[in-house]
Length: 128
Image (cartoon, rainbow, N blue to C red; front, top):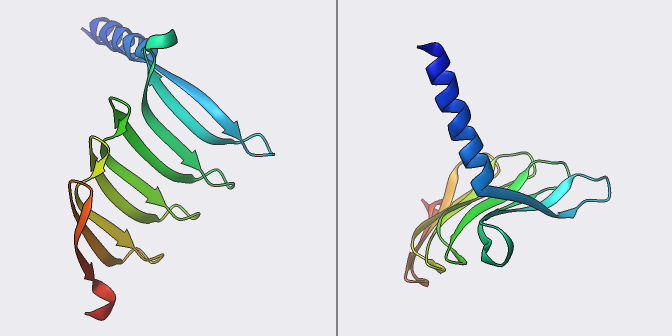
């Protein structure tokens, strides 16, 4: 039974590996990646599905996904030490739902509520 699982896992990885392509769009002077774009498809039909941007120390600055060329889903941003900075949600290129901002110590300090790209409410937890 194990060889079957290994074969299925290998086929899945091969399929996934072929469907998404990683492109390092820019590097820092030391050669580390600064911006990495992930595409699906090939040639003129290639579509950007994810973007990763890194701090000079190599830690992730932010990561987000795209759908039909527009920001979509959860985007996460980080301080240089890797601590979460804020999280935002997108639907078809417009901010939607709650954006949560974090202090460097990891505590939530603000929430921004969006409806179809429009800021409708702010909750400042520093005034609690």
